[in-house]
Length: 78
Image 1 (tube, one colour):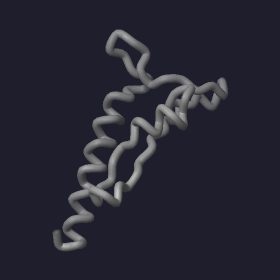
Image 2: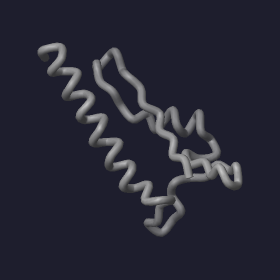
Image 3: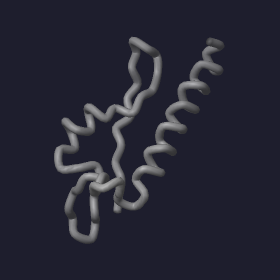
Image 4: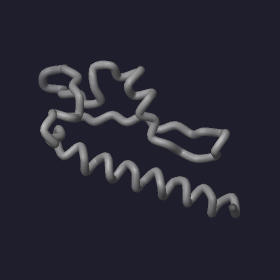
């Protein structure tokens, strides 16, 4: 399974963000791609279940975006 995320940089806030709205617009069939079946699907299966622990991947993504924003501020002396 391949998991796709859209990350964008907002020049108004000067921060990186996980752009879930753009994911919905761009990845209309879901954010997970199964290369064996060549099908897209939603990461959420229902009843609190996610594909391949997508909930853990989402937590990691949020943590990495937070680190990117913190690193950017350090580099610019903010």
